Length: 290
Image (cartoon, rainbow, N blue to C red; front, side):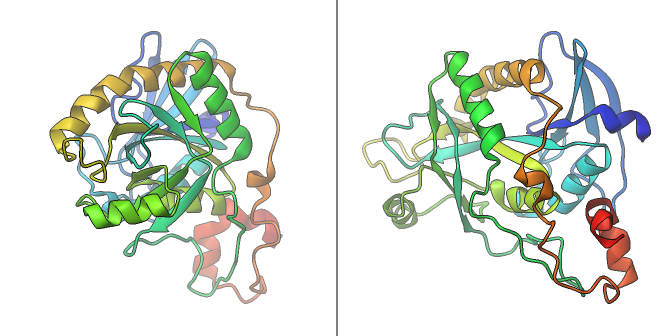
């Protein structure tokens, strides 16, 4: 595993993200975690002198519902191989007229409407409370926005991502309610990814691919899976271009507040934390227990 420590950047998204001209697949990492297996093997790819990890969120062949994704295992596995920065790619519906299908969005806020998901590494005798006022890494999000803009794609910044449970889409009443809240886009996967990445002290930013107008826009055809797939295919080239550019430009150096997010968050006396919990989370917090 030590050879993987140089991989500090990861992309979470669809299985086709790493099918990029000039990108060489150099490894496929099958890893066990205290939280079970990740969604799939982690692909290590190289572009020039830079390496990045790619993890298909729903598994190869799209096997996991949004609420079934083993997010704890995914985050733990990426941390284990040395990843410090995660860029997530996610399909979304638009809640605003100006965010058109096939536009790209870099959100800076999130509303959690999930109900069934395990969204923390803590519990079982370990109590902590982390800040989440700004759920996406500011530095990484700004770099992502600049990269997309410089490549010439239509992109929106500082929008709110509404994360719903799924897998069924919104009712029209729900869609209009989210619009009244100021939602910009709606998806099913940024929770608990963003929360668990923060707890793991990893930078996390999201590039959202708009595929439709959800169902609020009554002069538009209601959202269908066929529509989403068609627009997703159109967005794939944009996402791959952004990934390639990021691999060339993102720095491995420097730290931000994300990477010390849990420094003062753990409240439980270290002598009272159950040993099995300590063992599971030593990858993240052992530095605070020494």
